[in-house]
Length: 580
Image (cartoon, rainbow, N blue to C red; front, side, top):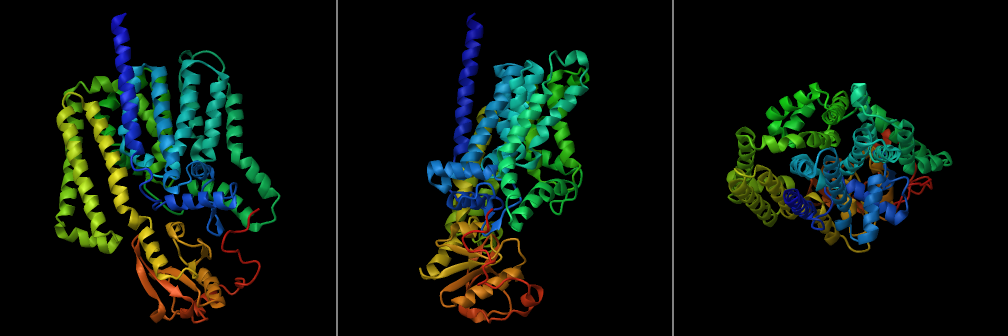
């Protein structure tokens, strides 16, 4: 009796210690930076508009409806702001909570399918994977999507492999439905029933699959946004609202998958993603793949379902010409779960232990070399960062010092633990990376990447009574502005924006200025009156006073004669776009 109880206590303390370490590493840096491109500022801008103007069903980016993504993630950001009243804290909280929830679901499913010791390996494998940690530290939709797809996987796997329960079937469908209105591919957990059907009947277990409850749950989950949004849209006479529905439900989903207009990659693209962003686990592939193959040949149900579903997800995204590295993130927990029963045995072998030790040593050396080289200004690196990214000298020193410190920390963890406790060394190395990333690297880049330094310069240059407009703008600039900002559309052609902006300037030229990137300046301006105000996100920005507008821009007039006048009631106001 004593041995099992002692083993249980050991596993319990290991689990508590592991979860506290993961919480500290994933939470490190929250509140220390502002939203930064590529995606964070647009989501926060839409969430801020929800709080300020009540556009909860139809998210806005400035004066335009934002139809690229459903609003669930932005709902979460707006809700956390209402609790914290601080956007710096609120915008990253949904990602933190989603990552912690995903880790718990992974641990609990592994515990139910195998035992608590294997569950520790599953959650450690997921936490240690670079892609998971990097997404958990970003305010992007994909980590919240991962929570819902993992919740659906957790419910369906329990339903099919542990015990048949209608509530689990319904919960899995509900999670897949909410995932679908979080990002269109949230339905992917439903594919788990494909490898299950491929199992021999004697291995499927007994009892009904409760497919009707899966469908009911899915419809209920998808309806939390689709139902009220479609109801409002059908009752609206606003053409912009109808265009929003059509673009989101068709162009941004089916068309984007079958005939994408960007991010086009070859079919093997995700192999290179796995080979880099799924480090360090992918290093163990030479030992994992044969072991997985043996279990698949035996039709071992747990491995069959997890690996079969993970491969279907990879196949689904590989068939589309449009690919991004985050697309395959939903499959990651399934592969970590499938690897967990094998890891303890593998890590006793010299080959896998040496492979992981080599990874940590190379990682430490790389960080040390980059950090030391940056501090020593090898090949003028400091001046390059100053010119290209507008990173100040003090921020550069902070950045490279943190890289050097992270390299030293990873090297120390490898030296102390890699030989005898490779799993612990790997988890500690990842925790050091994520902590340094959150507390050191992103705050050092914040003033430049978030646009804060540029907009501080703009606020200092303009008097308090001056109105500011944006042409060819980026979302972070609107977020960082110290006053209400007028925009003339985001996705409209730049000449169309100039048409409206010029007329807006003419109505009060002495009190109205525009912020414009160098690439969008037009010959109808008196360039002698423009002010080079700074550089942000690899663009040079200019302030254009109303007095610099010549009143006539032939190129814009030829292309956009039908645009309404600035004093036309049909022109959207500065604060918001037409709402349903």
